[in-house]
Each structure stands twice: as structure tokens, then as C-alpha cells.
Length: 142
Image (tube, rainbow, N blue to C red):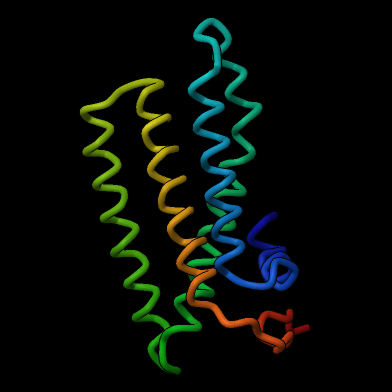
């Protein structure tokens, strides 16, 4: 359902950066939640699993919107290809790290990595963004 309502959610949040940050927050909460689930009660993971949909929905939508805003008209598909390349590289690095670090420690390490990256994005965004009065930028087209 998040992809269905993504344009409305993006308009409500105001920018792809904000949506991306909330996707990162959902990821961190989810993986830290995984790391504290007692071993004898693995089914508790299901409490955190809906956050996976939020993570994927928000981060994917924000990434597509952000890259489409950056690319010149007619080159939007090239931007999506770049997203796929970066995402594939990220998966490769994640699997490589996962091969060395296992279990609960892996979830905590990945939460720290995403938290640091999200903080860098927030600080960089705040430092480089001028206030905009244009409310039409992310309005939903009906």
C-alpha cells in the first residue's frame, strides 16, 4: 500500500530527503528490534516486519523522486540505472560484511552504518538547502 500512496505521502512530507530519512529510521528500528528478540521467541520478529515495507517504500520512492529532480529532462532512465548500480553495490558490500559478522552483531553494525549515513544526509541537507516557498514542487497531480 505504501507504493500506491507514495505520491501523497511524498507531498505530505515535503521532500524526498525527508521521506528517505524516515525510511532510514524505520530500517534502524527494525534491525535493532531484530537484534533484541529473544532466541526462544523468534516469532516476535513479526512485530518488526511491517517496518520492512516502510523502509523499502519510503527509500525507493524518495530515491526515484530525488534522482528524477536531479537529471535533465529525457535522462531520467539513466538516473534510475545509476540508482540500481549504487543499490547493487550496497547489497554487495552488505553481503561482504555479513559474511564476516553474523547474528545480532550484524544487525547492530548495520543500524550504526545507516544511522551515521542518515545523520550525514541530514546535516548536509540542512547545511546546503535554502528555504523554499514553492509549495507546488511535490504536490500530487490528480
